[in-house]
Image (cartoon, rainbow, N blue to C red; front, side):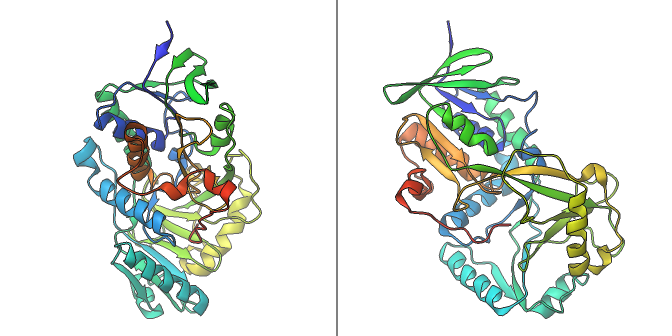
Length: 391
């Protein structure tokens, strides 16, 4: 007899685990998570920067963040595990008036969506907040105290273990080889452990989402793009706690590397424009030579900081043409639900994603948040939602 499940979730990362958790909390426990690796968290979840913010440029991303941040602030109450949520804030630095006006326009949109604590700050206040910054070219910025940091692997564990306590199953080292479709609807999943009969499948495979969707004959515009991170040893000149700082002139950003082995260091990131789509996840030491001058320019005391080679890493963004997620049931194959294309925001938006996808599966539509504009059909219909606040 083949295995059966009410819902099969392909991908055991933080998004898939959140969907499983929310389904189980709603009473749907005949759920099977399929993870091809020997352990969870070996994909994008374990390589994330661990930031969470609501300072976005579109209403839906702001709403997703507000829901998720509140959930993560009370994560231990919901799951028994710590999320590591630390509201250290996000600080965006504007180096010209155009960037500052952009931040001001974003703040007005954020206020309309209920995010009322974003502050427009001047260069003097920024210099007071973080004296180590070079601010001679800074004209202002925006700061939100409830943005901050989280621990992705701890959240992944909390979602998974709570779901498993409710009866959700997890199959590791299990690869999906096919998705069966009968009469325009999902009927089963073929795996290296055999067939699983089901009428609901969630594609939560991150950068590999397009390949998995193709197994059901569905095309989605998700491409993998590498992002590399450089970890520096702590210097006496830097405080142990400070916000995520984003230089809007080139996208360079940095945060405390609180997971550094000896003492908290500094984690550097920058969207290298020379990076091309692909599944490469090896860290290239040459990247350090590109990012270190940017760090030294913005934070002069980091000019002579030492690199922590074992802490440097690379992971994959799952990018869509409009840098917004694809969430919802596919119109051509019923029972196939997409939770993909987060463009770097999958970890921070995982609570909201799990909530709305579970509602779609169980109730036929999402009611906690209106995510109808995130359906895959928007691309064919030309209804793109451009997110300009991407780092």
